[in-house]
Image (tube, rainbow, N blue to C red; front, side, top):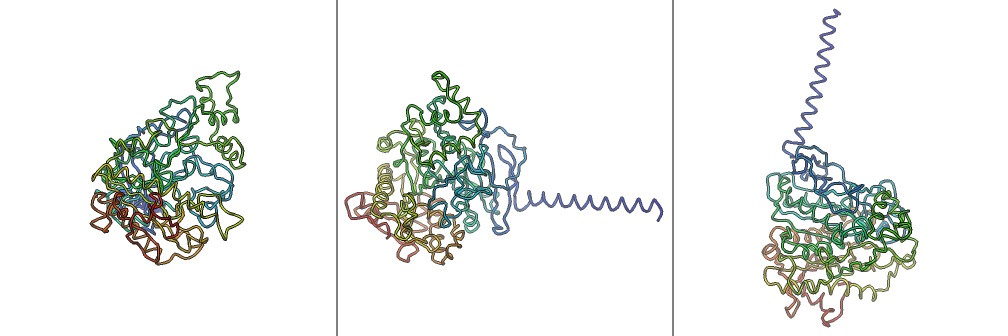
Length: 546
């Protein structure tokens, strides 16, 4: 073959391969910027998400930063807003690492197979490793967004969710709390979930910090909410239709926001799921002894009694690897050592308050609608796990007493205080009372704390290894979702018009309208509020197994 012909053929082959490669790149770019709208520009960067073939109508943006990484000199500082240019490009196709947290080795309901999927993704470690979470990082201030594929130019309502976990554990990457199937089903709302700093990294109570900078985890949440307000329109969301939602500690925190930012809540409504500010127990460690105790044990003790203002202690602690700090605190606790260490919210009367009763009576609460919900037997999963008595379970009268004192009565009081604010603050109430084979291998659990999470998120199928999902369970889940969405879409009138669900007015002789899900073989039923709240009013006994 002549050299010229050979050269021409080789050149043609190379050009053909380049053309194919170019076509492949263009195809990927079309997939990112075409009809699926997988690339979105925000004020802090441009992000490409993904579509899971199992959920073809839902776009997922799994990791979008909302603040600068709180590392090195920024450890234990309030979150700092991003200054990235909108043109800076990122993939948002993998879930972010969770914030630093300890994976306890102590046996509990949560690290057994029954609740598999209710803890953060932990890499190659198991759920009772007794070590810092393998897939955790200080660079953790990210949020995730789920939005319908057909919504790039829509103005959909937004659910802004904050995970529970006692301000010690939690994050975005928790299988029970991924709303993909719910968004796929509804195609009419957006869900955002967030990470925020936890334990000593979120609530340090350190001498070297200003009093207003101790509740850093709550400040993280506020900055994330502000980012959503400023950017959710690019994802098809309406910044004026955000419902602030939390579960357990996340619910308590959402209520903190309703008080701390009552004049500018950002949210159009709140959904408090198993928790309110009225059950919070802010730290009274005025000597900052917990932080200093940890500092001494990781080599940061001030010599000769110096460092009265804690500046040197804080500077030294910023140089200690986060895993060393987390492992010391966690393993100390697992061993049952004393004095016990705790790192939770601090009453600073700026973000977290000493007197919620007084603020409630003064009407210093966001004047927007609320959903407040409980589970019928909350505390069966929160008392020590009865490893030696799994058939009979814990002593139920003690569990019921906690259900009433820490669940029912604070919820009633939260309702009463909002009722007093007038028609502008309707309160819709529901109780999760359903028990299902894959969630209730032990009958004594009843409708336990967090068992309503897979019902709301539609993730009950993750527990099919325990028992198969039932059709009744699916009906209850979808009914619960539909009631919540009616509120999210129109928190003032939607529940009444769409679902026949009236606000609960505690002054009603019967306690007002309350929806009960999953009891007596009924998907949902209207019951008098006094059926649940009456035990707090001297009107009958509380039934944790309705």
